[in-house]
Structures are given as structure tokens and as C-alpha cells.
Image (tube, rainbow, N blue to C red; front, side, top):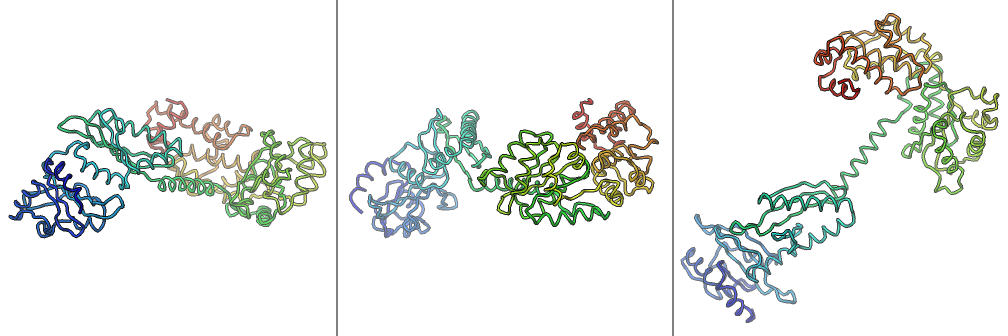
Length: 544
């Protein structure tokens, strides 16, 4: 080793409180200070000597490992004897060309206080070596929370943050909060950060020298892949939830001949590219049927877009222009379902006719159209384009009304009862024959949608001890005790089922609460609800 170590010994070694030993690349002791000599004599009863091998003086020394790994080891606990423990920091010594010259060990007694990081140049160089090679990002701040030292891993972390402004804002806020909290409490603070693209943990430790606040050190563990995986997992869950909400032909109860025919035609149409026209009265399940055609066909993994030609005129016009575009990149993909096409203007019907007649297999979309009114009657009145009528007549599927599929009513009611039992806490297990006959003969204006509402409303008000649904329990029955409540069901308003259920549920809760003099516990028990769920519904319907 060269003479540069002579000056190192004079300027650093003898003034340090720590014991210092330097070896060459063969493990022979080159230099040591007085503290190291005292430590060796105390342990082995023999003094240090130049050119002696390090293992001869310290048999358990691990400095030779540093020669092999060329990696620094900071403040490793080392037990010299049963009563003496020390902290050892080991550093490889290399020249400007990267050639290994030897290694150095700094031995500090366990009770010794840590010095400020701006101490002897030799230790600072060792710390710099650790900072440059540590994979964990950390930054050192002074008492004013100004950065005085940061490692490359932290610089890389900052670079990644700049790529995502939302993540950068979240992390900067948390880093600032943690630093201030550590400064206020003088304690270690740990904070988890769930950023949109980068998540991880912050650990901030105070730096106190002789009880005086000198700043803090922030350690950052971050993970980009975990955040990305979590994001993909949430996207997958959304897809799964969407798929679970979609319809299949196996979801349709088809005991009646006409419904069996419709399902068979739908399965054939699902594999074709031509436009499908669904006919049937309001409430017969045309949108659900269109969704089943989409999900059983080759475009099942693409979008299903539903457009109401009566309610969404602007959207209709925009989609017609996209469908007519010669630029396939502007055309929608998947299945486009247009309901109430009899409400299109004559000009829009002409455009739709051109689209249907010119559509080929190369198109990225397929059309499913429907109407709830009699198309022939509309055509005779001059409200429906004749050419479009004959075009759609070739691929029409008729969805039967309740009168045409009475065989399906009993199994449908049983399915709905199972769902309603879960919703309202009822325990109905079967349906009386007279109740089925009453449902089969009742003139529902909104068909299955209205009949389903009747079943749900019936179970919402039924006695929780009853296991059989009888005719008297049906919401439209004249024998029902409170006919004023049934008016909600018989109003010919075209409302979603969820709104109808909520309206009736509000009435039931309000009446029951009044009968029981406002006793919420008894009301919850009477309705088969938990007290917590009842309070939620009272808040929801503003009944408090």
C-alpha cells in the first residue's frame, strides 16, 4: 500500500474515539490507532503488530469478507466477549482506477454516542459509499427540514414521481406531514401512502445529538408494480361485476312454446352479423334479450351500447352519423342496441335503413333494434318507413307477452320470491295455487316488470312468520287490508322497479313505525330488519 496512509494515520486515526484498523488485500495489518491496540490487548492479551494477519489478532473478524464482496457494512453489532459489544463498520479501500487496495474497520463501543454525520472525513467517505449503493431511497434533512444529503435511489424516486402529477402531489404532501410530525414529537413516524401509481411506506426517524434536534432522516419504500397490479385487479373486478350483471339465454325462463321459440331464434342470431329486430310489448324483456344476444355472440368481449330513441335524440343522431361513416376507426365496436325506433324521425329512419341494408361482415359492430308499439299500425299511419319495415321483418324476433306465456309465470314467481326473501328477510317457501292463478289472470299493463314489482311488494309487507304466499297476500288483492298502499302499484307510471320498491318500502316502514308508537326496536323486529339497517332506511327516506 502506498504512503498516502501515513498522512491518513496522522490526521485521523489518533484523534478518533473509535478503534481503526487497515489491512491490505492479503489481510495483513497495515495501520491501526491507539484505540485499536488497546482493544486488541484487552481481548487477546496481545498487542497489534504491523504485517500480522488480521485473523491472528481478531480470529472472528469479518473484514476479509469485505475484500471479497467489495461492499461496505455499516455499524454491524459484534460481540468481543460476554461483557463487551461493539459496532463495526467495514469499508473496502480502492484507488481512482477502482483497484482494490485493502479494507478498513472502524470499531465503536456499544455505549458510545453517535457523532454528527459531518465528522471525520474518513467516516463521511464511508457514509457516502453506503448512500451511493443503497437500494432503499432515503434523504437527510437538517433542523429546518432542508435537504442536505440524498442518495441516487431517492433521486430515482423523485424522477418517477414527476411522471405522475397526482402521485407526486400525494407523496409530497405525506413526506411533508411526516417530517413535521417527527419534528414536533421527536419520535419515529411511519406512514403508509397509497398513491394512484406508486404506493409504499415512509419512515422518518429524528436525529438527536445530546438531546438537541439536528434534523431527521426519511426512508422511503415504494413499489410501482404493486400499485399497477392493484389497478389491474380493480379493473378486472369491474369487468367481472359487469359480466355478472349481463344476461345469458339460460337466464330466461322458457317453459312456454312461444318463449322457447324466441330463445332458439336468439341463439341463432347471436352468431350472425345481420341486424336483429326485437318485437314485443313494453316490459317483455327486449333489452335483456338484446344483451343476451350480445353476450352469446363473437362480440361478447366488446361494448354493449344501449340507446333510447325516445329519450336520447342527440345521442341517436351522433351514433347514426358514426354508423354511416366510411372511416371504420370512427365506427363503434361491439353491439349497438337501439330501442323505441318507432320514435325516430322519418329522416333518421331513412339513414337507419341505409345502414341496415348496406351493413356487411367487415363492420366492427352489429345492430339490435326494438319497438314496443305495433310497427304495422305505425306504418299505416305514416309514422314508420315502409322500406325499413320490410328490411327488419326478415330478421324479427317476437317476445311474447304474459298472456302468451302463462306457463312461465309460476317458475318466474318462485325465482323472484327467493330474491325478495333475501331483500326483505321474509321466509316464503311456496306459492298457493290460487295466488298463481290470480297472477296469471291479472291484466298487467307493464307485463313482467309490473308482475315482478307486485311479487316484491307483496313480500315487503307480508308477515315474517308466513311461509306460503296466498292470494290475499298479493299487493293488488281486494282482500288486502290497506288498499290505499296498493295504489302505488296500480299507478300506470313508467317508473323503474327500484323506484317502485323504494316508494312502497317507505310507506311500509312509516306505517309500521306509527303503529308501534315510534319504537324502532319493535319496528325492526316486525319488519325482519336489523336495528342498524332500519336506522339506515329511516335516514334514506327522511323519516327521522
